[in-house]
Image (cartoon, rainbow, N blue to C red; front, top):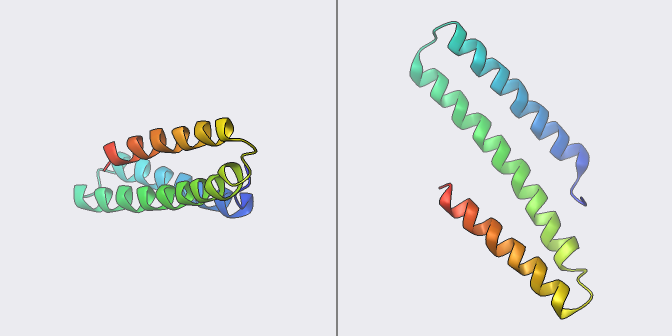
Length: 89
């Protein structure tokens, strides 16, 4: 992985902290809308971390493909990932 590991790690730790907070909110029977807002915030952080990883993949892994077969494989992986991302919208 060529992404900025420090940045991605910090984002993922922040998301983990938010999820721990969400679990506590559920245990404490907090207001549903407040819980939902926190879930959306955690999802936004995960999307940001994923964006960093995908951008790095495109810059490094795809950009460094040494032949057409390797490039086709990397592009195919990206197409499949984009399909999964679109399904999640």
